[in-house]
Amino acid sequence: MKTDKSNILALLRDSRDYVSGQQLCDRFGVSRTAVWKVINQLKEEGYQIEAVSRKGYRLIESPDVLSRSEIASRLKTKWAGQCLYYLDETGSTNIDAKRYAEEGDPHGTTVVAEKQTAGRGRRGKYWESPPGTAIYMTIMLKPKFAPDKASMLTLVMALSVAEAISEETGLNAGIKWPNDIVVHKKKVCGILTELNVETDYIQYVVIGVGINVNNGAPEEFPEEIRPVATSLKIESGLQISRASLIERVLDRFEQNYDTFVTTLDLSRLIEAYSRHLLNLNAGVKVLDPKGSYTGIARGISTTGELLVEKEGGEMVTVYAGEVSVRGLYGYT
Image 1: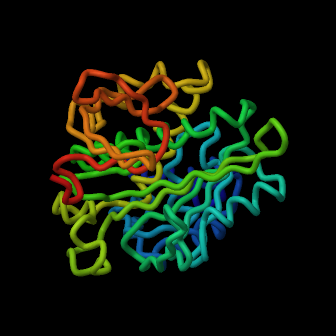
Image 2: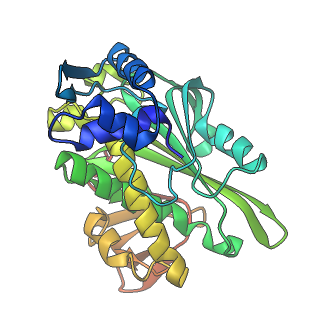
């Protein structure tokens, strides 16, 4: 349920004209004093709101702020993000989402943080994330399907993020299989999926998403990742609304997840995923513990594995392990 503040903000944002104080009172069943307090709170948070006697209020400009009200005011989803937590600072949104799952929060619960101090990526690497520039969010799911289907959710989220970035910025966001989001051959987003399984059923899944949004220059990234990392602002030259992008990610994920659960495979999403797949028909080097080999990536299977055609024509299925792609991340 949206707060009064997020409801009022949503109405101001959606209206092309002035909204009278009386309209707001009648719509949300609150007093004029309550409306006046909310308007002042929004102004203090940086929203430019014009107040004209006998006309009402009009939203002129929204700041790039992350708050529960700002995000909730944009959401049009049925379940994704409808239970929403916003934190100024946290260790890890994935850890927070796990706790909320254990406490009984519903499917689709989403945690967003302005700053993350113990974000974790592949191989357990930790980093401290600066405030004001990126998106750190986790969605928690309570699916009804078997645990062996859960790995595909990472690809569902990758597709959703790539679609959302492309829609929001106009950039061509690609996917380096299975879930790195790449713009102009540099990484802008990482995704980490974790699940809690008991015997043969899933208690919950958390999918963490970290997107470099408004970092202004390559020097803002740690030196060790500078050659391979970028931000949406660096690549587009535009300041991006993080709250708007979060809304788009949740909207796309809800639609793609609902499509996925109709078949419990990626058959209805392969076409969309392939449009963003940078590996498609590209040379790849597969770093397999049994021995590395090269080939041409021919797409993904309905269960999300990478299909690689080896030099002799043999088609192999890559289930796990690192895949280096020619022309990306310095591999040539």
